[in-house]
Length: 298
Image (cartoon, rainbow, N blue to C red; front, side, top):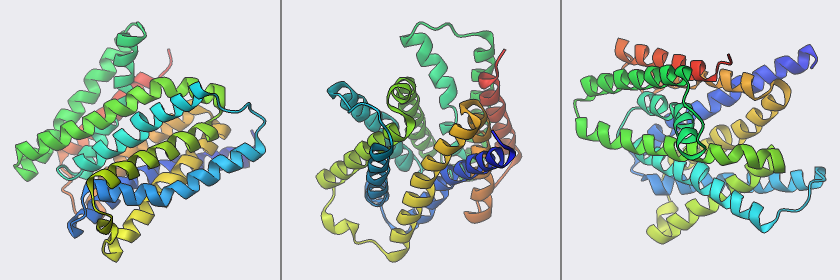
């Protein structure tokens, strides 16, 4: 890899982390206008769907991989439901109750959940390193919860929101266990296009079954925020992270992705005026340490 290619990979990885981290901020900015989680998610996915269709079409034109089998379609639907649709819906719902900073810290515990699920379902032993990582992550989340409770004083909302976002992390972690196999066999672009496209359809079906069509007529700021979520916090980060992994490898990109909670904490303070206290900073540091520790080799 040439130096320019390496630098471009680093840039893509950092921008991808920023884009994913900005999603929670955009969601919190939209909620004061009265939009609910189902409608906001439907707006985001409806705007993102054409881009994923284009990504799938472009991949089909440039790749020589064999056509998808019925089993492959089943995998894409499963990954789309668990890793993109259900994880997104629970995350959007949880952000109605808790701060963006706490949301990102809870959600970022998913690598430790992958370790636990691998032990439960794949019979992979939990190492001492993994136990230390789990202890660090959940100690950090505990400190962040204490910070939010101290600031907001509403334990019920924090518990409800925290459980919803934790459910999002569980759903995403479960999908990751199958995502690796699918990417190896089908390619990252194809998996991203089909699984994300399936998730968009699931979100739109949920909206159609539970909301009147007229509820899509939202104020202009909500529509603009939905478009920003679709482009800058969904489509572009998916593409940039894929390009970064091609240039740098998964391990380096995952390490750069640990910037996510720090970015969200800072943006929450800067844009949403969310209080940033010592508990939350210490909690963020512990979660970052836990994620980096579980991903460290040796």
